Length: 90
Image (cartoon, rainbow, N blue to C red; front, side, top):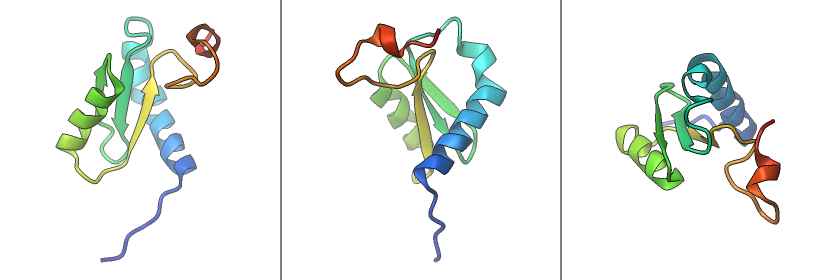
């Protein structure tokens, strides 16, 4: 069965579009700092304090689908050599 390759940029674009159009207004102010895993095929999502928990629950429901993970209210889900204060959206 042929498969279609999806680039990391396409995953990010789809995930960001789903977040901005359907999820952002629901969660941005009340759940800052929590992790959100978004299935880019179905638009469904899971939220948790732990990024692995959110991802695992979503993959359990949609095995094999591609997902986009973000940290609500931050530019990045994690930081290397920086602080969370610097990564937080202003």
